Length: 363
Image (cartoon, rainbow, N blue to C red; front, side):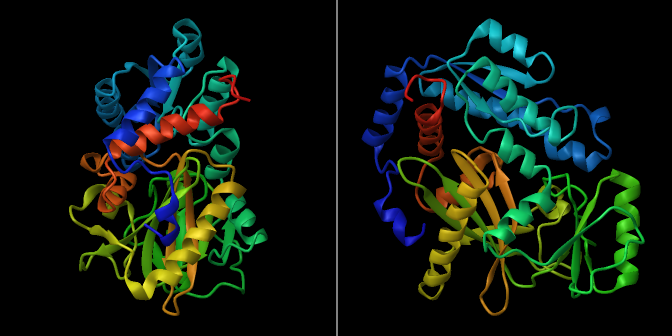
């Protein structure tokens, strides 16, 4: 946890947690709906794209049990074309939104907060604007650049033979512009020369039919920065420690490292005395990005730190995978390292979503 977290309103004991639950119940929260990605194999272009989404339903069931233990009624809703009708009929008091894709498409994920806005039901996480940016990495990077948040030099390309920008320097990493969850980010994603890069582009365009980001690869440390919103923003930083492997020339979170390989990396606290200045800088930039991208309640930022100690924001995730450490979610793993039980995090997210919603009569 960064230095300024000592002042934040994070529950430190059961009394603080109970106060949060009592607040929700006093505001009339009884039924909490949980929306989740409806993942069917035929929605997705590849098996790995499917794998990155099919886990959401199991995680929704885990969160359902946690909410029931808090004393709330719950109901699960698949994020599909029938959601609006179901919500209109049931009128849940609050929605825990876990949907990333609709019919396998990230940009259709914006339909979920849109439906929730139409039904005027308070919901957790970011709204349509942040979802739109999340489904367009190039647009998100331009906002970061315009506001002096460091991100690697990049180029957006739409065909294999598009000329390479002279500003770019190898090694270069290729990422799908419209996909998250590490989809398309194979162990072979970093190119040291143009021949290899063109081969990568050919594979990505043929397989996913999506524009591709070519980005300078920052060879160095990798951080996961979690923000949890409340009266103030709490920032928790975990450093990824990669296990030695011959599968990748460079250490980075490929799809396999994230979803397939066991023990590819683990998190450790980013709290060494010599890292405090960097932690403060990263914390400040993450909060700035959170506000610029109009995120809400919680978010995750992936940051690479080069050999000179300069941080670069390589990904910004509204509504990252929400779950306890047992679900192997970054938010659960990292906050647990700092001694904050996941149920405190979840309760705080629910409270913040209710307090900041324009549909609850507070504003």
